[in-house]
Length: 404
Image 1 (cartoon, one colour):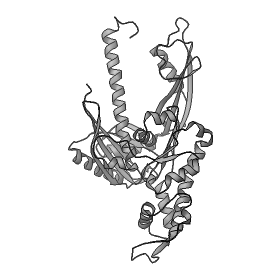
Image 2: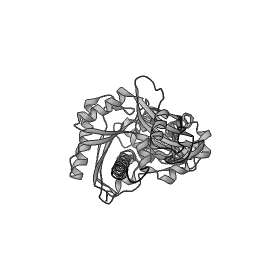
Image 3: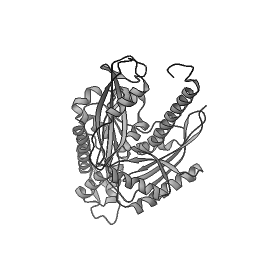
Image 4: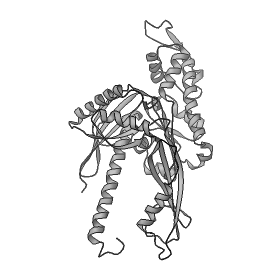
């Protein structure tokens, strides 16, 4: 029977800071026991620009989550985003020694090191090294080569790296809040954990998480990560376009975006007006068609940028699961229809998969990254426990059971 573990996810976004406390019960089920949220200050385009301000926001969100959970926390799994994050795929290979033909654990470790032997820009550090596939004598799609017969072993990895100082700034503000960082996860990786199941990954799917200041994306093919990245544009840029283009105050621009705008193709022909009930705004009302036109143009631009970045036209035939939209900006009316128009494949808006706990947070894509962080932490903990059990068995029975 599994032991109970506490997992804490901390999302530091441009528009909000979100904390989720979850517990893996003794029966292995994950239950959300506390959540907290605060408006984000000191973050621009997903990156820290004022440690003092964002530290106060972290304290506010974490304190709220602790109060709801009736627990004090010390360690968190933190998300990281920003246009400085880059990714690549690399394949390495080794020959199997002549005195044997069965692949052993040491061969797997050696080929993985070979695949991870890549050059990244000076000043960058590895954030994720995600195994895609192994190859045994050219055979594709091998998930576990241990014990297989072969003369050559290859491994392919998806590697995410980013600027060391920018990642350190994110970690520093968490430490300033008297918290320990137990793991760091790319926001797109976390969101995918929250909104996808294994069948989605196997079908092939593109996840686009549109936050306040960034758009994170991750592409799966045949169950493996093929591409990932971040664009320095998000929902705040849509709000800014509405504010400037329609000459309305920023607070009203954001309200118009979330409550009135429709970005579906064809919505630019909508009739009527939207009234702004604000005595300080002289305009009084705006044309609904103008609002939709401005909003649709910016969101379409975001999708086109993602499409070009991953060369989606060459990937579309492998993406049977279509496009999955999440993040706060995914709540815009008509956004799935617009994504289908741009990418040419079915698109849908996804909220986190339901877990035990308060249902409200599973009804909004705004919580995908934060919930994905605790799911990631749970998976990592289970992997460690499996390795630990295997090591204990090998130590105890290794002399009796050959090959253990």
